[in-house]
Length: 200
Image 1 (cartoon, one colour):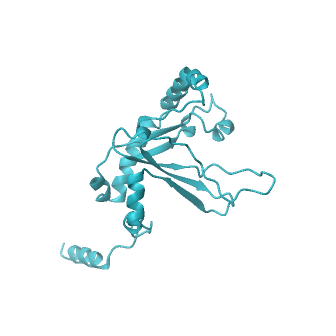
Image 2 (cartoon, rainbow, N blue to C red):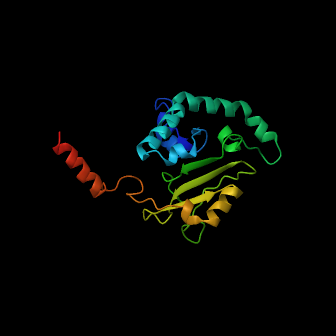
Image 3 (cartoon, rainbow, N blue to C red):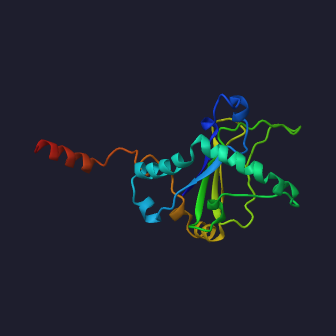
């Protein structure tokens, strides 16, 4: 599992102007990742999966992490500038050298403010050219219509794309309250709890 983590809130407000940082996309984003068996995720309650994610994110959600990123990029920016066609770097999780990773990124906080002379855009897709990297990505962006809707795009490695195409209902499940564990408890469970309580 992997997440793109926004570190703007972790930067020292005394050193960085909050308004400028809020609009800046550069070196204040980093990955958090965690190797987890598919069975462990699919059989765990949502709260346990959220705790796994929270632990991984907490490891990188430190101001020192973002300072390290800035220093790393400063030390290497000449390499990218001098290379024909620019350059690209990614964190290890994006290379696919470990388990396949699905990275979920949210661009929802970014407002789309553009007009190319023929009106505001109707569709915006943040895109990072992956080359031949071995990770997949789900990107969530706000609709430029500003009606509260979101646009979710996916970039998948070929075998996963084939699996989705072969049986989309087996892979893509609706995010209902009941499926996420937020639904009302089953009436049979409530009856069993009441029966147990009455015998105490």
